[in-house]
Length: 121
Image (cartoon, rainbow, N blue to C red):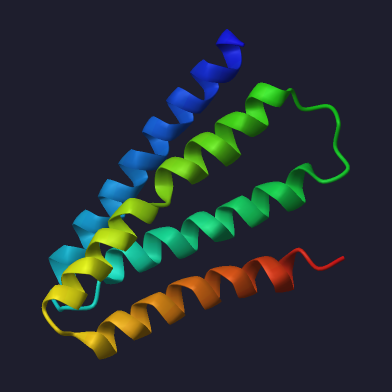
């Protein structure tokens, strides 16, 4: 159990740093109401998760801690549902209903479509 916890812990730290870097660079070049940094982080995290799932498919020679490190840790730390929810709340508070709707629809649909299309048997 210790190795699994440490794997998720370290992977989560790496994912969080990746998310911070994406946000840092996006905000540096894009300063608008639409929460692009969170959208990009979440979509990239979904894409990475799909990549890792496909990579590990039919492979049994990788230890459980390694998949936990990548999927739960890195991808979980890189994606950010709490920030997504908070930014949508702020858009709601500011009456930016068009941007709010676009953000929710784009975030959910693109991520879901990635999974549906790329993990299709």
